[in-house]
Length: 181
Image (cartoon, rainbow, N blue to C red; front, side, top):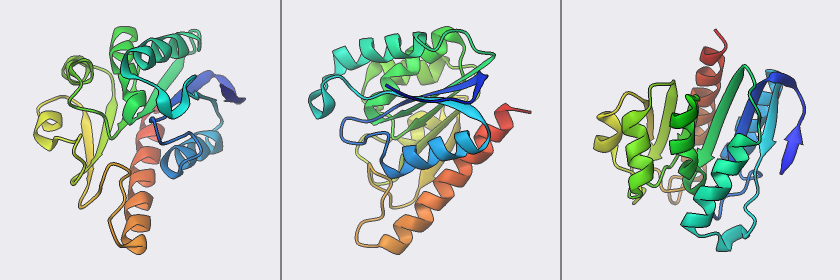
């Protein structure tokens, strides 16, 4: 775990994907947006790295979220495998950002159905783990990247990928600022 100290009453817990570390673009810029606003940011690194399996990841995510204590505002941000923390966020009544959630996982789908807290879900139109219809039937806010894959990249176009990432980061930043009002 890496901790970037800031306001101890505003804490964000970032959980990466299996092949998408906290240093990958979208989590990196999410961390920077949070740090710019003075939040404490906790980054999780999976104990088994890219070999992390679903069940141990679910348990590790629960422990990581619980380790933040009880700040006034605790935001959970998960990318792909990190979205296994969704049920924990629901149980604790925490706001969340889920980037490319694995909607084929029953625990993730159930959590999206049950969430009452502010939640932003982001997916790519061409991502096999994405299902716009499933997300649109919940109470969460949604941002879809047209033509985006699981990394929210636009195949064969770095310029379009950069535009898409800029739009995602802006949407995340707007969501974070909305939590503080």
